[in-house]
Amino acid sequence: MVAEELRRDPATREIPFVFATPRVDVRDRLRGFELGAIDYITLPCDPTRLPSRIRALLALTRDECEARRQESISELKKNA
Image (cartoon, rainbow, N blue to C red; front, top):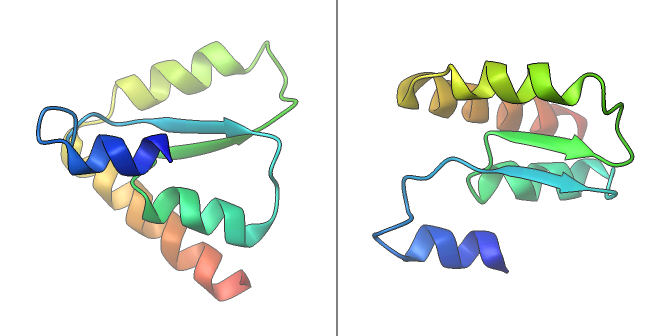
């Protein structure tokens, strides 16, 4: 999986990424965040909302990204 490759490579390990996928199952979302995603967008999505969502993610610091990721993992584990 590409996300696993990104995390293994020291040159790309710290790059934040977003999953954009039609997979909507809680287990799929949880796996995405556990692999390091800072957001998980299910497709199809409203294209008018996507730019503001991406801008909000780009404004986050590294620590805020990690906190958001951990919060998402905790929430999804409650629902898994």
